[in-house]
Amino acid sequence: MRKIILIFFIFLILQNIYAYEKIYDVNHVCYYTLTSVELQKFVKTAEIITPLNADNKTTITKDTILVGNPEENPLTKKYIGFFKIKINKTFPGKNKGIIEKQIINGHTVILLAGSDIQGTYASIITFANLNDIPENPIICETSNKVNIYSTSLNSEYFRDFIEKNILTPKEIEKVKSLSYKLKGKDKKATIENIAKWVANNIKYDYDKCKKIESGKFSWDEYNTPSETVKTKKGVCLDYATLTSALLLNDNIIPYMLDVALYNTSSLKISSYHASVAVKIDNTYFVIDQQPYLIPINEYTAQTFEDNLRIASIVMFRVVKERDGIKLIKEKEVPGIAIYGDLINLLEMRFNN
Image (cartoon, rainbow, N blue to C red):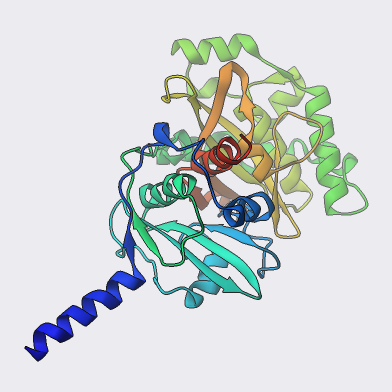
């Protein structure tokens, strides 16, 4: 009898700690359901910190929506001890996410995270359906699937081709004089000078682009940095390799971005894109054929031509080594679009 009573009390305790939320679908977010004043106020004033903008955050300073598990988001890793559920790769498990509220530094913090990207997406969709701030942790799933895509620079053969044929020490040396002309008073000024020069002097090669899209194109038709300067035209990879070479000559580490773009109508990968990021004061800025730097958080949220959006980004650090240039995988954010989805869903839900 005592065992039965003990089991019953344990059951009640567990029920009080965890609530299991039903499966939600992105197409059935309850945009017009009444929500508490507290939740509305929280969503409209909270700072959203995802793996994309967490690098320059060291502490919680206001009400926050914290997105991503400890392996994805350094701020989650720092504060995971405050949460009842110690989320990791194995708990709550494959395709499962959690939503949990805690008070940290006097501010309300809601953690949306999963054991994997699908689980994080589940927490985002579920949170967008809530009517109030949950007092107890929620474990959730969603029937809406996140597509995780492999991208072109992930091909070892393609990286090898770039390292051995395009971004070689010899080819980088050929644009050294231009790099020196673009050197500014400090790192940021130099980067801005390079971005402006490339954007203003290199034109997009639409003929080459059509050739790539038709499949009648070979890798050796990509330009070396000096060829891009000489011809004054190129496609995205040509822009990226020239920008990287100019940065390397000025002792600035470039990060080549391998970007998968998806069509917002079909939700299928439509094309791949290359650009360059730089790190200034622990924040990534993107250089992408424009005469200005774009904060990576803004870059990932923008819509490209033909209604394309970013599905995933793989970042490669371009480093000089004794035997040449190497593209080393720095980080991978396979479901970048979900962070934009969080913002869009909350706007749709709470701005009506």
